[in-house]
Image: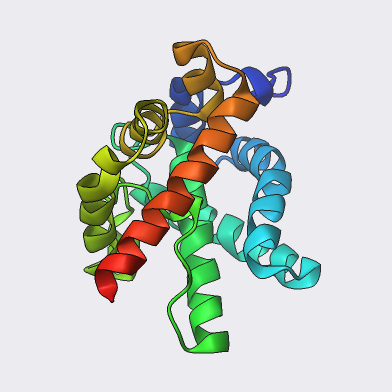
Length: 194
């Protein structure tokens, strides 16, 4: 595995790599670790705003990936979705402990829950299912261009780059449409709670 370039890995390549990790292949895990750790650090830092805590949480996430690798199912989700779900759950646990209140709805939170590893499902139910229902309920309030992007990214789990290519728009446009859509969805969901 030393001559491979993880930058070009497909979803299938990562699934094959994780099959090796399940067999306790340290070289395969090193590949996963080195590819995902820097990306996770940025993701976690965005949620927590503390570099040291972010580093610790990335370590905890990657330890979970190693220990719970047998729970990864490449048919249900991509490896990145599974790893980011673990990291996000750890972030939320930490934020809940710190603040004792529910975190705000962020773009990354509006994901379908059917790909969750079995041991993480309890972190989602029932509020995660409710959130998904609310997103679907308010989806038609968005402009068509935003609806298409939200559907592709959050409901079909397509990577941003693939969505950009699919709709023949720049990656930045995908991100800004998502940001605008999430703001509008958050406003609609909050308004309904009043």
